[in-house]
Amino acid sequence: MRAVVYERAGGPEVLQLVEREVPEPGPGEVRLRVAFSGVNPTDWKVRSTTDPAAGWQVPHQDGSGIVEAVGQGVDAGLLGRRVWVWEAAYGRPWGTAAEQVLVPATHVVPLPDHASFELGAALGIPFLTAHRCLTLGESAPSRLAPGTFEGRTVLVQGGAGAVGAASVQLAAWAGALVLATVSGPEKAQLASAAGAHDVIDYRREDVAARVRQVAPRGVDVVVEVSGANAALDSAVLAPHGAVALYAGTPGEEITIPLRDQMALNGQWHFVLVYTAPRTAKAAAVEDVQAAVAAGAVRTGRDAGTPLTVLPLSEAARAHAAVEGGAVGKVLLDATA
Image 1 (cartoon, one colour):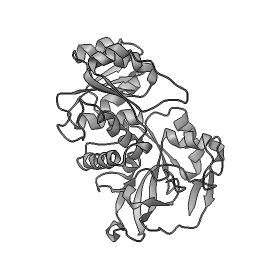
Image 2: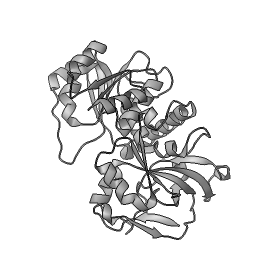
Image 3: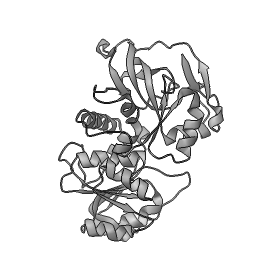
């Protein structure tokens, strides 16, 4: 089988397309014939900074495909099922950038027939991160379903990004009034397509004033992509509201107006899905699965998430695209 592998940390050039023997699933594992592999920012960040613990690494956490073998203790009913997978490579050498991959059975989720394999590969880390950000606050629901966010307002900073678009779709499905910030007209169209009710171009508008105009009481949840927005988030937060920050760079710090946030009983949370509690991830998988089954989660330009699809042989180009800030979702086609 073909697999993308790297043996040392470095730039995209360390990725190699090689031939490997088809692996056999061990206890608690399934073997997936991969359709698409999703590329996330953490994939290139880990590749560029960390030598593989096993001496080699097939990258990528997210993917979709068909279960073709199961190990001891795994329900044989999974054989032949269309599925999506998450955290395939976390603490393991087998990521989804291959024609076949071994995945813990607990990280395999059925994919409805109406949902494309491209959508399945775009779920995983972005949607689990979005769910975690949306459900941490005191004024937020602990689970997402139709109506659970009714009467609440969500601000998604960077509404055209992968996590941003996932947050918009999930919050809108759950009944929130969703506001999103973007950096220009094209991204504004994408955030609107994802389901944002009001889109604010932060390069042209006073975001705080616009938010307060639409939501005079403030916002209950801020899904935040940059610590540079801390002052803005503080200015628009409602009493008992929460800010969930899911991205940052090493050494980055933020400054929060402490007394103002104390008066609001504001909450500030920091999110990395890989180290989130297992119970939180299990709840997120269930809720995302329900949203997919309901047709509330989509992908593609008309859903706010343009797709860039490349063959396995162009994994380096895919990583470079994500590192360069590609809009939407970058996928590898494992059949091409």
